[in-house]
Length: 358
Ligand code: SAM
Image (tube, rainbow, N blue to C red):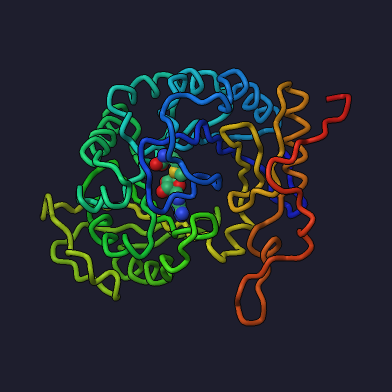
């Protein structure tokens, strides 16, 4: 396993299979690569099936244990089932999707080897959902979640980005996972670094505090020091805080349910601890490795041959640095400022000069 200069082993890769998407979520960072709007048919710059598989085989050589397919919308790739099937056996395969293409394909993906799925779901109301995603496919997403559960992918993690427009929906989403077996909720702090609109960000500590009150018990996961809140479904739960108070309190599908749901908060913004525990590198849909989601000045072309891919992987790991705490440093006022030591970073899509041995 390769380790960077900050003692962080790279155990996982996140592979963006396309930057195309059938949604246009208002908050989307698109893995750091800009707008997702555009044609939905396959594009010439996308990695071929063989190139993705070769890259994953190289990752397996370096002891990488897990791959997550993402995008854009990864299910717009017709070869997704083949990619999952050809992923080296030693690697766990998961996917993040908007869920709309899971009906009809979930079972085949499980047959091919898909082990886990995250489905993005930011609201429990069709109109709210449409406003956030610029899509009318709310029902289809619910069907997608059902299809994933039917295919044996429980627990299905629902990804919800928490920011001003959605903060009021949190209590209902928490109830939803407490009331429905097989669901978990991952609350993702809105990351304005790439998506803009810093004014949309909320104080995520408020959500932690509210959940700590609401939860039966709390566990801390070693990875990223992440907290997991176990919540029980309760009729008539009070909703605290300003943004939280905007929620409608939740529709109970089963007032007598006593199931416990799991809620996790992913809070990377301004969190040096989170970055110190980041063990992932990312591959863009057009074949560049990224050491950090928030940066585009460290892109390394993976090349075509496995030798080039090995060199690119080693270079990426060698050069990756924690974003908060190193690339960005905290001043005495608690503000994060750019570390001048990185002013010579190469810039967008700098071609990587391979040695003749590669
Ligand atoms: N289309 C797929 C989907 O909907 O899950 C995969 C791509 S999407 C970029 C991957 C994840 O990034 C989603 O779970 C989404 O919620 C999250 N995400 C996107 N923009 C974000 C932002 N600005 N802050 C925090 N999370 C964000």
